[in-house]
Length: 192
Image (cartoon, rainbow, N blue to C red; front, top):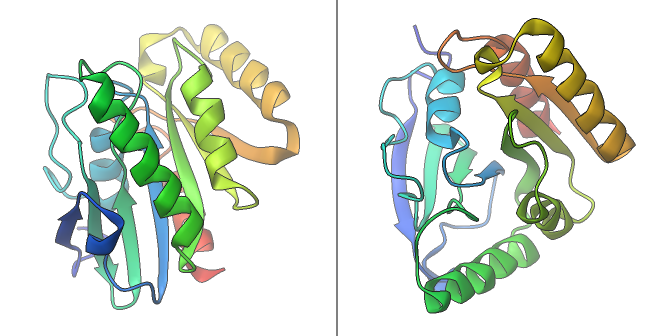
């Protein structure tokens, strides 16, 4: 059973004027295209196809607002980095994400979804800069694709790189590894 039985899609926004009202608390989820962002959201919320998954990287092209419960939201940001989109679309996303992070008073934290096999890329570091002073939690997704020792080494390496700037954990949507830890962090962010 879902921890969020009232969870539902609210709306998509392609411009700052289309964002939902800036009240309550929300947590943003960002990640490079093909890092497993939608799958991670679905596991954390424990709802199949809550955030639509696709075999084609970069399908999330809008800012998608989901209500988890009254006054608490999850915000799925456009995937970045790998998606085959025009330079104009990339520029639009940059402006949209800049406006999102600069304007949202209700934003309590950022979940950064990173493919464990790729580790932190420049776009991931840029997303952490967008987040400013907000707490950041990194999910190293697809941990099941590596042997346990390799996964532990990747976790240590990313943890060293980010230091106290972010918390980091291993995560696998396929094996549901790390779902409780991720959900606990989400609840901490929403309650902050």
